[in-house]
Length: 269
Ligand SMILES: C[S@@+](CC[C@H](N)C(=O)[O-])C[C@H]1O[C@@H](n2cnc3c(N)ncnc32)[C@H](O)[C@@H]1O
Image (cartoon, rainbow, N blue to C red):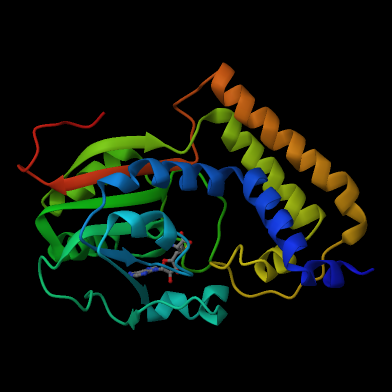
């Protein structure tokens, strides 16, 4: 039986996708954090840079409408543009194609590093956000180069605070994408998966790595019996060590919540 025929079974794909999500230390922490903050979303939600809409089901129970929008220039270069889960709208230029103050919730996940003018995008998200609305943003602090050449910046919560203040917003909550051990584990597992086992093409076949350029590179299947257990061990150890020896000055990134300045008395946590 070949790896392709194994993957053709939906049950096997489901199990492999579940396992790969668990060992993907960045994906799993972002999903956990978004599930934690989703109850604060409400009304009309705009997902800016929605890609393959992976967070739609997390937010749908809390909002009346989910709208996913993408930018033509960057989106067309990714494998996500070939996926069946499409954005509702693809725009070009710097202006989001919506009226001022038309959304209660704006979601922006791992997008800000891909725009050469992040301040302009935050200004636009602030413009379309209602006065009592909430902006939920996730951005990387440490992550390998990806989606090249559209990979421009990494962010600290303080830098985000400055960009948000310039757009009339203030940060009300900051949540880290884990600590030191998750950073180390994620980098080791990325090396094993992409350089040793070369599973980028296989991962895209399962709907992962859709933000990268499409690849049909063949996996080194013979490495999987070694690489698979090693990645599971590294992911388990990283999760445990992050609990036992937290080191918050190292992290993969941040989820921040922000509201219009002056509409809340809470400061950053
Ligand atoms: C790393 S992917 C993340 C996609 C999705 N949010 C996710 O987490 O799976 C970055 C996405 O941001 C989009 N993007 C970059 N600049 C953008 C902009 N100015 N407006 C909307 N989307 C943008 C890219 O096209 C790409 O799909």
